[in-house]
Length: 252
Image (cartoon, rainbow, N blue to C red; front, side, top):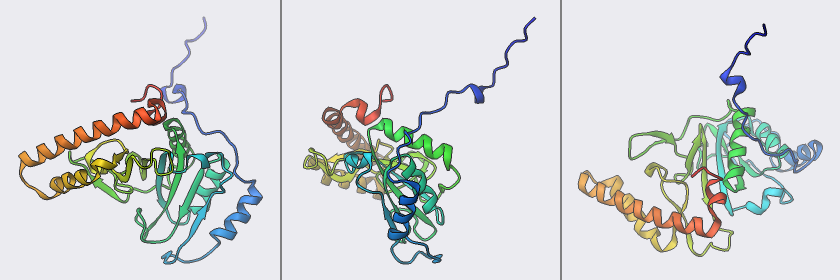
């Protein structure tokens, strides 16, 4: 009698889809470009600017400030390793190693990766979780209005993982005049969407109320209004860019 096949949830769990391997530059070209832009150095404080920008020939360059972008906060010393991985998988990105940026620059470095549709963001997230999960850091965390500890990122990122945040950026799109560069604060637990320009001043006022008042009634009123403004913004973003592009198929 044939033995029953054992079931291992970990082994049988379907693997998440990764981005396609489509190098921006060959391995040799990447190393040459890295040396030219970022260079090799021994400076533990990273007190001057260290920066690398992927070439505009990258297939994802068309998504620069036109859709989702991911912020990655990671341990110093892994800049080339992460950049090489992103180059291999055709990502459009920049790596920063200096102090004084959105990440905790005294001890970490950061990357900004432009991916466009949510599907691409999910693939990138799977790539980092599979290939280099140990380099992301647990620094720069924030407490939400509901007491939840999340990755703070740029302050308006949607937390998507350990040291990973994402924000929907429209500043190079045809709708750039409709939305402000300001996004809904991470601590409000909304998705990482930009605030409609006509509401940006009011959102800032409401956020100040959330931070600076002890009156539960005022807090409740302010948060209710913020929810209404977010809902209006979300409807406009979905109309302008499409639900699949913004949130992915069946993800919303």
